[in-house]
Length: 500
Image (cartoon, rainbow, N blue to C red):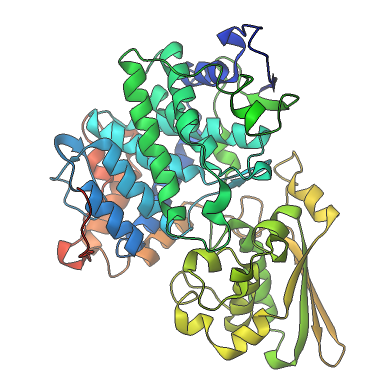
């Protein structure tokens, strides 16, 4: 790996494109380095993971809306949509929209946290949709997904967006464009222009994840994917993009991020170096924001130590700056204490999440969020006894450059009314790559079987698991095997009408 300094240049200095970050990203995308075997196996894990959470969310309102919009755009030789017969095809950008929303809705797929946040599995629906429409093969798909992960992970390592209240899909648009470039074997110039267009069109504010969090949180990554597909289509037809998109004096770094004195350090693979960033990412055992994963594990452990939750006086959680300010009391969002808040808001409230996991001794992707659960009086009482605090030691560990030492955990001090204290801490979630029981293929399959139980036929479940694990051997035109069909009588519909 080599680290590149990226900074702002005034317009009077014509920055050569070979020195621009977008070009360096495009060079990595067009590089024909051999694929890493472990990275290939992890892609298969993430395809299983994405399918799990997408199928589990098929009858949730945002997913129904996205699916109904997408099905208004049929195409004879297009892409598949989860839940719908694979014989029916749709324009790839709309397939990406529907499947991307389904994958993101439950906040239950993979994550990578560094200078910024990301859910790299959000890259997959767009790349898969284009691969299906272009009748490509399993190896093509692997190459595209591995490049997308490499791009997003390294951007997240080097450039912080949330500090400037910019949503993390600003790293997702460029990573999907890069992945599509690898998938389609485009040259560096075309990918370069596509990355720039994708970034330019996918910048939005973090209000998506602030205050009364709405269904847009699920739509946002799918929207970025749709825009990235359209960007690549345009540049393949000879169009170009605003340039330099990162370094220009009126562009992203200068006007939206750290300003004209901005300096970022971006790590990227050397020529012919294998892309392995996907191996640094981690999935979720629990359906909640990633920084809640270790705290759910702590709460479940504490459940066995307390016989009467009404005897708790207060709970203090000492954790990193990110956790405190995004899902903790540092966010200063009163909605995070509101029993009537949306599911999207509750899964970004560690106070709510910790209270429920502590009382129940478990976590469920549906039952832990329903209105009856959030209104339970004992939960509301406990919920309001919880506060988070930033601790510099935890913040430092959160940003540690060594993945084996990076920590997304916390220390919890539970004080009882009789003065007794119970203390628990955890460096990282149990299911994390370096946790106490890291997810393996068997765990991804178990998650798939659990989340799809009662939704898809056993024969369809077995068929998908066999095909996805045989990905390297899927031939041209065979990627529709990665779709999952559901009895259409089980798919709910939204009776409201739109434009399409």
